[in-house]
Image (cartoon, rainbow, N blue to C red):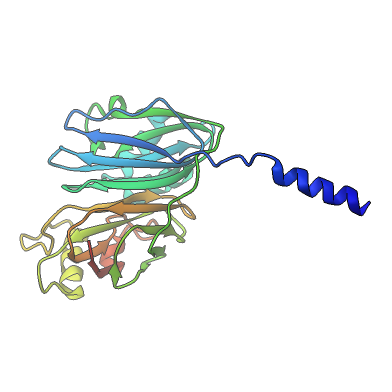
Length: 274
């Protein structure tokens, strides 16, 4: 019996070892006219490299609708959530779709790696919400069963809690963004003017939350980061942002009160080392 076990171990050692499939990468360039995307992907880890030549940038996210929910209904949810009905619209978004995350880009390209399962998905540029041709700008993506490798190694983690970011003071290299809150949320890095304080951010977002946009914005550039994800989703973000001081913020509203999370203290100042 012992000799048989030795023989089995020996044969297993000689057997070829299957190598893990390489991670899929998708290059997406966003223009004012929209973007193109592949019709199919394999399930597993997918890295989206996103750049934009649209002056407004892009907030490209991947979405999977719940059973029985149509694309028209989901887009209507988005219109309400990002328009004049943020609470009920936002609750409908949370109920009707799983938001896997994606990349927000301004002048600097970014890469976001997501884990996706088999099924029908959509890529949506949330910057397009409110445009009359929104439905024609959405790209359907069928994810086929398979395996496409693992999520890349990261150097730090940003965790979103209910009303709070937990993040290191300095970010260098790829970072994992985790939504450990009870609703969808996002994590955006925005360059700030030298000397900007948390009080400056609070004053700005208090005004925005009240429907006023101050002329003395603390920001000197657009957002780069991870677009809204459903609770307990995560994504790995990699970007070549210039070194400097940034605000870590969210523009999402709390579904319980309708107030902007950032106006309720969900913000931080971080140093990015490129």
